[in-house]
Image 1 (cartoon, rainbow, N blue to C red):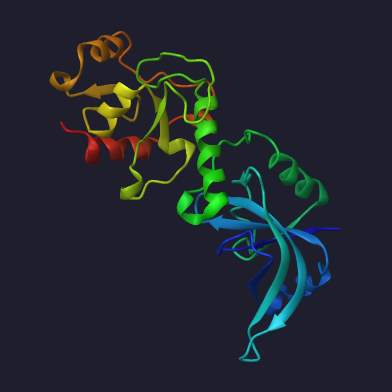
Image 2 (cartoon, helix red, strand yellow; image 1 turned 180 degrees about the vertical axis):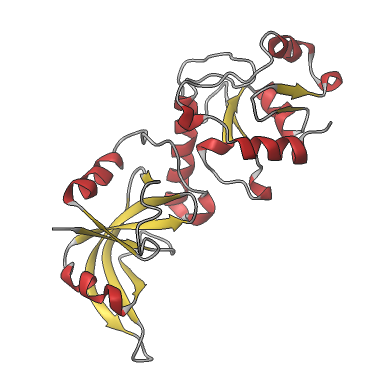
Length: 257
């Protein structure tokens, strides 16, 4: 029997949530009364992020006599929100998903895993409270692990450590205040000197991963480490490679030529 997942945009974690539904969804929701379902956020063009479970407590009719909502209880945030790219094109994905039991169980299992295999989580602006902190820390861990705890600019590798890492920072390609998402394709780990130079526009990279710099503003030590290779030190897993469009944005909008 298929298992239900509902799209939810509001905060998770309260005992009673109401999710708007339409009449096309009614039969599916009623069939799931009393069952545990998954809750997710649909991020158009990016992924489906599963962030909580809940139980279907009932279906309610609005004061207008027309609108419907699914009432939930026991809403509980998932420890590590898993995501799926392949579900973006499923019909009705903006409202609900019908998952096979195996898919349902796989999401729950992945939510208990320290690092999701896909390597991404959604922007913290979509979360509040503990769920926000979980999402931010998860992406932080994913980026560091995906890059092998290695600085993208200098290639220096470090032992895994606590969050935040004592030797590595995360640098945004497209800054958050300019529309950048908290996503592994928009982040690279760097030592402090490199991250400072990247953020201030002294360092950047081309879409084919060549490092460019305002040489006169670089420290001699950092310049020496960059000059040896002249390219980003990319991880083996391409899931963690910087998005070419984000690199182009950083070079055109942040880099001080």
